Every structure is written in C-alpha cells, then in structure tokens.
Length: 195
DNA sequence: TGCCCGATTAACT
DNA sequence: GTTAATCGGGCAA
Image 1 (cartoon, protein in one colour):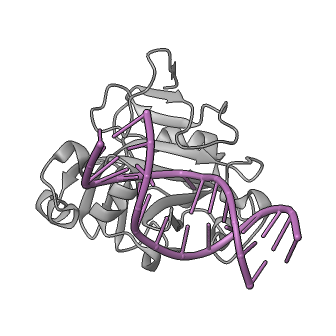
Image 2 (tube, helix red, strand yellow; image 1 turned 30 degrees about the horizontal axis):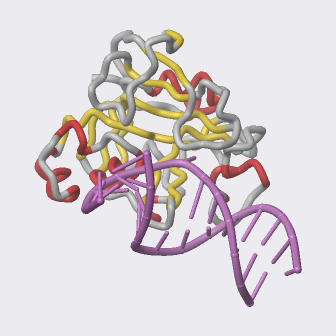
C-alpha cells in the first residue's frame, strides 16, 4: 500500500503533480479507487477558473496546496480538484476518472447503475459515486473523510489535450494511465508517453 | 440587469 | 449527432 501524500507532494509544479497522481488511491469515507485520469490547470492558463482572479467560488484555489476545490459544472454536476503549488499560485488538478476498487456497492447505489466501467469515468460521475458536493469544498486531503495514497510501483502515463475546452486547447495537460478502460475518453495513439 | 457560455452527462433522434 | 437540464461568472448595456 502506498504512503499518504504529503504537503510537499502538492507544493510542486502542477505539471509535475498531475502525472504523479496517476495510480494514486483516493478514498472518501473508505469509498473510491485508483486515479487513472487527471488534468492540470494553472493561473496563467486562460482555461483555468483562477485566470481572472479570485471569486467566492474559486477562493480555495488561491489558498495553500493539499486542499480540495469543488465547483458546480453546467449547473448540474460537481467537479473535484486538488490545489497545488505554493499558496497564491492558484493552480489545481482536476480529477477526471477513477478505477473503482473500494465500496463498489455503495457507488453503484449512488450512481443508480451497475456498469463498473461507467461508475467513475468522468468528473461529474466520479463526484456522484464518491458523494462529493459543495460541502467538501476547501477540505484538507490528508485528513478524514479523505485518504490519498501514493502509487507504490511505476506505471506508464500518457498525456494529451484537455477535454471540453475552447481556450488553450493546444496544451497537453491531460494525463492518464496508459491502456486503462476506465478513462472518460481514450488517449490518441500518438499521445506522448510521460513516465 | 440581462444574456451568453462553460473543466458535463444522459437521453433522445 | 443533437439537446435539455440548470447555475455562476463575465461582459455589455
């Protein structure tokens, strides 16, 4: 089993943290699985919520690393982010997909479906399965209800363009576990191998 | 104040 | 492939 992720882990560049999160275990009240897809967002990035400065919604992005940033997407879904880099950098990693491994029956009930491949394969789906809402915004990742453990063995990470954006579409800041069937979308065959 | 759009998803045709 | 559901931010008026 991997070691708990530390403040130092999240204090690095978001472009280093994001690929290193692939393969880590995320549990919320004991329910969750292995991270297989994430995206990086930085304050200088026109696609980031923090690009235009602090607002009540994105305030925790401007706080210290190692905390959650949860926001409502399209007025319907919730999306989970991990704040990275020193306080004020306003960078974060969007958690896009998980390979469900713990609490399968709980997640299936919350999602109202049985297909394990679709349980957590998307930012909105993952939050529904883990019961993430606005109530979890701004919480520390190294304390309950969260448990976050580093991957304990090397694996292949691929990178490609982020999904659902109209700005900065050229930035290859989406990272995934190569070959995973739990990705929200497959990576192009030409996707760069990262680690 | 009002209008448009988005780090989405599921249920349509 | 298209569309509705639905809410906060940005920008024009």
